[in-house]
Length: 375
Image 1 (cartoon, rainbow, N blue to C red):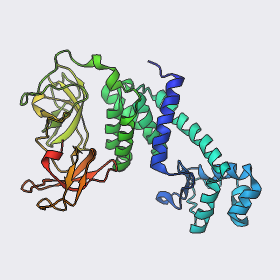
Image 2: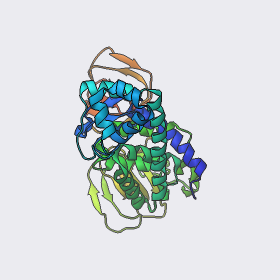
Image 3: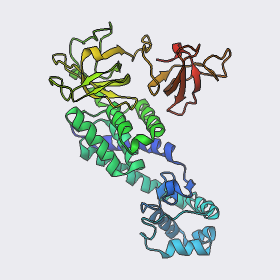
Image 4: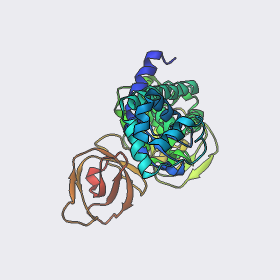
């Protein structure tokens, strides 16, 4: 199924808002971004990667007199008189004074106009690059666009291709899968907080996803874990409790064995296979492949299903309630009436509030919480 021009435009609109929220506003200047020189503007175009200087030159050329007055003669001459590639692969950082005047230039009507045009051009290219890899999920394409904005085309295409190889085709990769493989990626997995925020923002959008379009891929008779009464369906979150991980649902020998408890997403089901569930870890514990039914302990997607096994490092959903300064505190430090994706950073099974959770989506949960408030 081809992605249409109208759909690309819709994805660009969603991705643009998400990227701007992660990066900055028109006048944002990071003086030395990750030791790669200055990053500027609402998409944080970077000097080292050859984006900041051409952007500034275009703005300068819109009104040279205004630019000279704002920047001062020395900086104006450097920007206007250099080749567009003069800062490429050089760590051209900005001083505090340079950052102040560059911010002022970026915030002019000319600066905003140029940024709007360049951002739309860039993000459209990111989405089209995602389409070239074979993605058809509009949600996955929006997530892909942010990956490319942050990590470059190498990172985004690598993650989409890796996910596609595991699932039997990039066209099968939805938001859940591209997010899971981004977290597993050796480079982009380092930015877990941003990945979580982008995932939640894309998930909340009205873009279509393969996981909602391909309901016919689910078995007509849901399968059931041997040690639970809940049916398992594609897209569910489950707990993997350890065991063999196989390259196919009919493989005789395990590719490897994982002696971990891991929160996983069910990405495919073969009810006739010896290893009926294809799982991908959602907590960075490295489970990805087909597993035995007895390795799946419980379904954990519904509000009625409290997770029976929670480990340090797991990703859980905090459903709102008190947050405590310690696992044994008598009174809450604060009340958070939010639903937040959190990482479990510590556990005290003997505590009244057993789980220490930290929000991964910017919703401000940081502290010990009650078991009843974790799903």
